[in-house]
Amino acid sequence: MGFLKRFRIRRILKYRSIPADLWQQSLKQISCTHHLTAVERVHLRELATRLMVEKNFIGIGIEVDTTMQVLIAICACLPVLHLGLKQLQGWEDILIYPGLFVVDRDEKNPDGVVQHRHKILGGETWQNGPLILAWDHLHNEINNPQTGRNVVIHEIAHKLDFLNGRCNGMPPLHPDMSIPEWSDTLSKAYIKLQHHPSKHIDGYASYSPAEFFAVCSEYFFCKPELLDKEVHGVYQQLGAYYRQDPLLPAIKS
Ligand SMILES: [Zn+2]
Image (cartoon, rainbow, N blue to C red; front, side, top):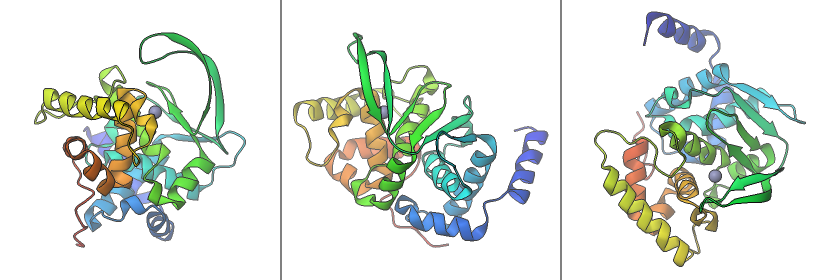
């Protein structure tokens, strides 16, 4: 990182840091951050602060206040806590609708067949495009952590998946990870889920390998005990990728 960039980051953290009260209150609301150590919480605050400066939060039919921005930024930065904010470069806007939104367009399904789709969505993203989300949807998920779902984490998982060009359920892995092991573990679990739907993992995970990775990422952070129990190998691979182990109790430091 060059001197100018370091200087700019230091200024952002010094003058535009998320106020302490708002930070504590927001962190308390998001239960999937509760396992983080004190050091990780400080780091997450820095990343969230920088994300709020670097991205444009654009409400469409809704006013997006700072409290909302902080909640969104926390969810967006949790997956990259040990990967770095650099992973979220190449796009600028976070578009926020008040509730679920409709998309009507032709799309390729996972088999490559183009179909006209009319979908009602809680979130969406694409390579180099904005991250789009429905505020009500995220707010409900935050208030009902037992669901293990989080639309922002889902869309960030897609963003990471896109980093090697294709959103196919395999983001660029670290040099110490094995591509065959990742492919083998996730493919087997994905195919098994397609043939034997789980009572606990949302069926949307079996739509495509990309959705499998994104939905499992949600459970990894929001309901790690469930993912570990249902698909232990997938939990381990995601742990190696995200460089986190949400099942570890926080060591208060
Ligand atoms: Zn998705």
